[in-house]
Amino acid sequence: MVCLYSAHCKNNSRAAVPLPPHADVFAHSQQHSITNHNHNNINSMAFDEGDETRSRSTADMNEIERIMIMLLQNQETTDPKTYVITGATSGIGLEAAKMLILLNPLNRLFLVGRNEQKAQIAAKEVASVLPRQRRRYPHYCDHHIIPIVCDHSSFTSVREFAVELQRKLEATYNRSIQGPTNGIDVLCLNAATLRPKDVPAEFTQDDLEVTFQTNHLSPLLLVNLIYPQLNRGGRVVVTTSGLYVTQTLELNGIPVDARTDRAITKERFETANDVEYYCKSSYAFSKLCNVAMAVELEERLRPRGITVSSFSPGLITQTGLFRHHRDVLPFKRTRDLMLNEKTVSWGAGALVFMATSRTVGMYGGGTFWQDQGSNKGPASVYGNDFGPSPVSESHITLEGRKRLWSLSCDLAGISETMMPPPPSALSALDSYSPVPSLQAVGDY
Image 1 (cartoon, rainbow, N blue to C red):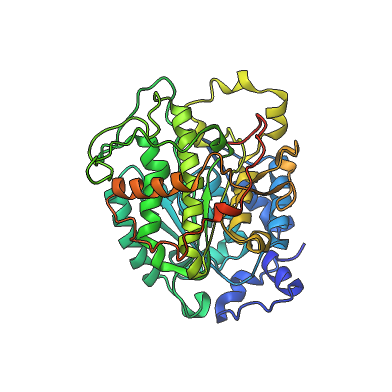
Image 2 (cartoon, rainbow, N blue to C red):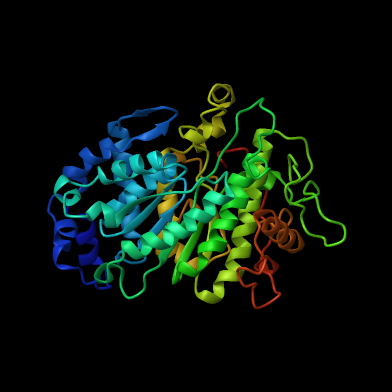
């Protein structure tokens, strides 16, 4: 098998972007193949499992090879792109970053971690999937695999991240690679937490429940702060869950000033929907908020030529997200669940597919993507078994979505018009029909 990047350029009707003089070091090396060096490099691609990592088995490598071929064949473009990936230090975020750098070593990746150490370790691991001669090119990693810090449990950290991202965008810009516009082509909002079971609600330094702030409010603040850096024609991809259909967008738990109808900040509440706190239901509600936010973002960013979609990577138990819940999983492995459970590699491939594929581009934004109950597990095919589903209007009403945006901006300390509202009052949901009930399968 020949070089992933150069082979695709040869077979793609679009001409490849003109590359700088040193680009052949990366893009045209005969060693850049899955069958030659990539099997060795894929074997080094480790996935997070608490505090330990496992080497790739032959089955793992075969799966990654199949996924990489699918992704390569469905790329919208071979041009180098700039990606910002939150939650990039473990799980599907880390694996997706490795796939993106294998798809095109000239991609520029900003790997977001909650602290400097984790972000630096992730950057080194992503770089390790490339041959040494590429990694040793002067300043290659400094300009293509960039660690950056953002702790989603702190609004202060999110604001500092936005400033630092702008600085690093300018410091790593290479016009001959990124083109005339120095911005973000794809923003992947992937960071999330699932809190330990049998533990009371925990609160951040901003006096907000950890799950709600980490999974919903901080991503909303982040995208409001950096949306001017999104390139026209770019994408925002929100990692969420099919579990959103187990919740309804009720916001009675958020304290509101009766005179102004604005959310009261610094007044603690355990759940936004005013139900008893439980880690898994709070997680599912935050995923409902993610889907609603994605639809709202699509309306607001569409005039800038930016599409926003959300997706479920499926039930993946071998990530850090489940580190507090592994002891109960073996007792719940029904036949249907086992048929639909996904691997970390498959979930990462789904994220990369959402970020790069022409299929997603053809459908446009405002859609929610998931496995369509194929019972194929990690053999599910992106764009076939994995496809768009209508956003459920019965779970996310227009009024509820607008209310969520307004109160969330209050809690995050920004104006609800910081990102210009959509030019029309018409909702993208007006043309949606409710999705059928999801089966009890891997919809995490």
